[in-house]
Image 1 (tube, helix red, strand yellow):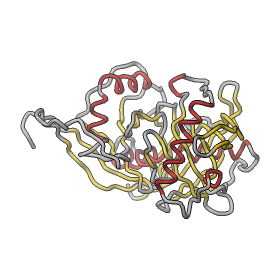
Image 2: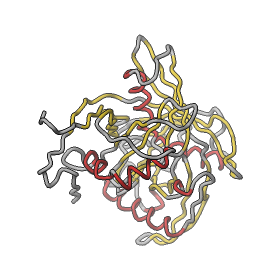
Image 3: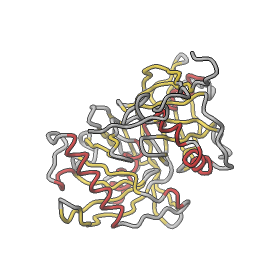
Image 4: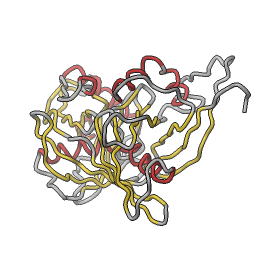
Length: 337
C-alpha cells in the first residue's frame, strides 16, 4: 500500500444479489449523541466518503453500503448507518441480513448455537435480529423491524405520462409507494427493466408532491424512499415478484426487506395477511425473502404490525480502498446512460 495514506477497509457481501459493502475500519468517528445525529454528521461533514465508497471507480450506480457505529440504544449490540448512491437510508432489510451473518462470524456479537439473537440499532429504531448458527457458521437470518403501518390505501394521484394512478403507501422502516405494475401498463415478467425503473421513478416524484407523510417518532423519517412495483400477488399461494426503485433510480436486486415489511403492513390492513401466516416475495434475480406478520401493535396513534423477514447473505470478498491526494476523481463520480 502507499505510505501515509490510511485505507478504508471493507467486507463485501450480497443478499439476493444486492451488494452490501460493510465498512470495518478507516472511517472517521462520527459526532453526535444519537444515531440520527450521527446520520446528519455523516451527511453534512463526511459525505465525500459515502461518494468515494459508493460511486465509481470503487463502486457503481447501484452500490449499497453499511457503516457499523456505536449504539446509543441501551439494548443494541451496535448501530448502523446505511449508504447508497443518493444518501443515507433509514432502514435496510437486505443489509440487516448481511450484518447479522457478519456480526456473528466476525465476533462483533458472541455466537450462540443454534441461534444467536441481538438488537441492531437502525436510524428508524431498534431491530431484533436472529441468526441461525451451526458449527460456528452463520446461516439464515431473520429480523423483526420497527412497527410497520399503512400511510395511504387506494390513493389516486396524477402521474405524468400515466394519468390517474391508484397506489398505496406503506411504512416498513422507510416509506414506499406500492402498486401493481399492470396499473402502469407494464408486466413484471415481460417489461424491460428500464421501463419499470422509469415508471417507478415518475411515480415516486408524483407521490412526493401529492401525499404528505408523517412519522410519529421523528420528522427525519418522514420521506418517500421509493416505489415498489409488484405482480399484484400477496405472496401467500405463490411467490409475489416485485422490484424496488429507490433513492436516485437505484434498483434493489433483493426482494427488499423494508419493502416486504411495508407490503405486509398493507396486506394486513386489507385482511390479506394474518399473524403467523407465511408470505414469500421474489426479486428480479429470483432471490426470495419470507415474511410474516408477527403481532399487531401501535406506533403512536397509528395501528401497526411487527413483521419478521428472513433471508440469506453471502460473502463476495474484502477490500482496502485508497484515495491519493492528487487524484481528481478520488471522491467518486457516476456515469449513467
